[in-house]
Amino acid sequence: MNRLTIGGRVGQVAPLKEIGQTKVCEFSVATTESMKVNNQWTQETEWHNCKAWGKMAELASKLAKGEYVIIQSKKKTENYTNKQGQKISKVVAVVEHIERPNGNGNSKPQYHNDTQNLSPQELEPQDGDMPF
Image (cartoon, rainbow, N blue to C red; front, side):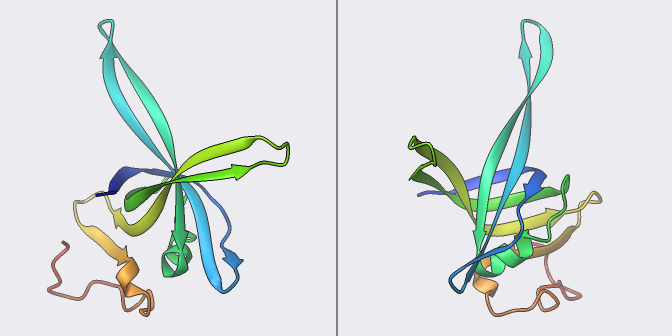
């Protein structure tokens, strides 16, 4: 099973692009881990490259820098040759689900790839909807 869950803060969000008739949005998410090294606490931050397609791309393009998100994705390695002729491998999280929790324990709308035909207003939770 190829599943990747990333919970962290949004970094840069690239403008929404169109490739043919499909929309794509690339963005980064930072995760920070605290660990004890030689009796001192230190933090290590790792940046994750994320790529969203279609309706997910439209929603991802509206994320704000610094916003906390939980991304459900699958891991994909992209290989390409840059302008200097060097072969590059890049690990990308292909986004399938974005959750935007807020600070009080409740959740904002959760966006799934299976909601391709719904507008953002239709994705808003209704009274009585369970947050999971």
